[in-house]
Image 1 (cartoon, helix red, strand yellow):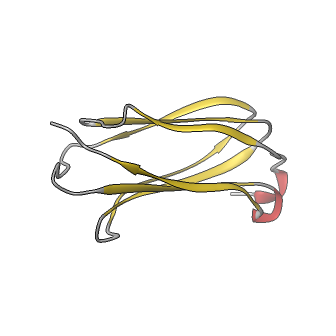
Image 2 (cartoon, rainbow, N blue to C red):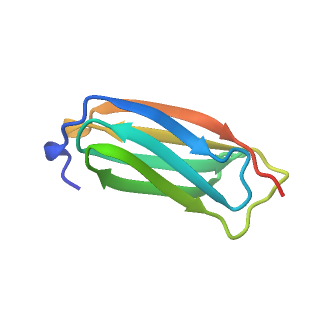
Length: 101
């Protein structure tokens, strides 16, 4: 991926929905330029459950995690980063996720 062509300067409205979730979890964000987003979901032992990486143009975006098997007794957390030019981190964060039956 070419990080040279990225021009994002702002990311807003990062959210996970629904939360709690059953099998599908949507993540949404609005970006004002071309960016690379990377996110990972880990369990309470920091074992990677799922990850996502993709380039995005300016606008509103939603991406989806689909789980065929997920332990409803464990706690989960999502970490995310949005990258700008030369791999500069424009926005990063995390959020706790809850699974329901």
